[in-house]
Length: 150
Image 1 (cartoon, rainbow, N blue to C red):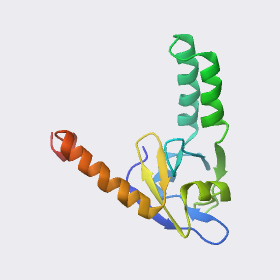
Image 2 (cartoon, rainbow, N blue to C red):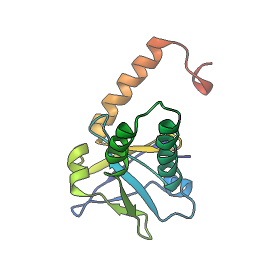
Image 3 (cartoon, rainbow, N blue to C red):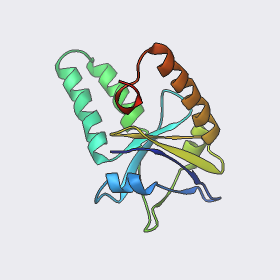
């Protein structure tokens, strides 16, 4: 599982370190998949298993009629068509493409955020604002799960 958050520097060539815990979650894989989010100015990512689960979900939803074939193709283009497989070097660094850095407003550092079976990459300031808003929403909408209150 992708857990925790980590802010890492981005050098002039666009290199940044994938958190060690994320690399451990990927096991033997020497790469990650990342794509610009359609939900905001951040990146989303995961390993091969997550990418395969996205593809299976699209096909399953077409089969059960909850997603039209035309919409399925649009989903594939937006999610899979923009994704890039980024290999990391022996020190755990990847090169974030410039267009991805531009999309997420990444300049100098990036915050990796674990979300279980996937992760996000944020501009650190934007992530801090998002976390504050999410914390407020969670407190306002009821008891927290697990170790946080239930």
